[in-house]
Image (cartoon, rainbow, N blue to C red; front, side, top):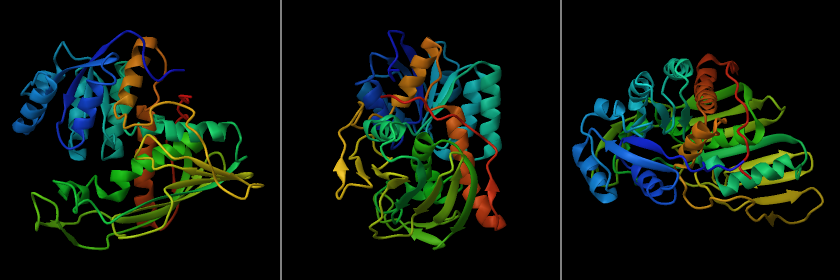
Length: 365
């Protein structure tokens, strides 16, 4: 089943013109311009909105509510900062608009549940980043797993470790506030990839800690600014999957250097090395039990370049073709619950039993 829709084109209203927006604008007005059309944009920072409007020739609507209620918008693309995900999403679904957002779906589980409930009542689609799992690298891994190249998956590891965003991001403060931290910032890429490959999770144990009370920004334009850290910056734990596999996960903003892989899947007949889930490409390596060396596997599907917006385009196609979309609200909610589950398990000192379930998204290959 193709990830791209047919001839019907849905109209997109973009809310948020910050750091991540440029790749969305570029792709949705470039490689995906035959599939969707951006008809409006806005941002609370007027200059950012003006700059994007001029660069991409997209109409700027100053008032967010006016954009959401525009008759020329079918889908709201919510790429605001995490603390704004919920109010924008709520306004969108109440206005009867389909919604695709950046990760996380919302900060709180009850907020996300409310969005999904209203959307279901109104027969609206909810989609959410990340959509990197739809790219050539992870889809190639999905086919290798589905075709039994490493047998039955028994375990996995997933590591996202660095020393934070204050060294490069122009406005890194929100990464250390509620809704930020390494788990909520980068965890969605790793957890979504794992759920796509292995299926839903049933139980979590975890340990979360804040290593430093403050961080000093060394990037411009805020070089020298001290940030108060309000969230855990090193989170580690274990996921028990419904399929029987167990995964060890670490997300950290406290590590300067390491030699850890991004993701590896260990099966009864071999090991699969999964590429960085923050990318759409590769490389992909496999080593079966009777082999002495790793083999690189050619891509078995498309989209190896930065294709952010692919999940939105797939959702637009699903709306017109009346089929399930892959980067779904149910998947995003399951991942949101998993992220909270690590923190909850750490605070309680016991396992967190996952309440939500979701289906593995349909493959693209």
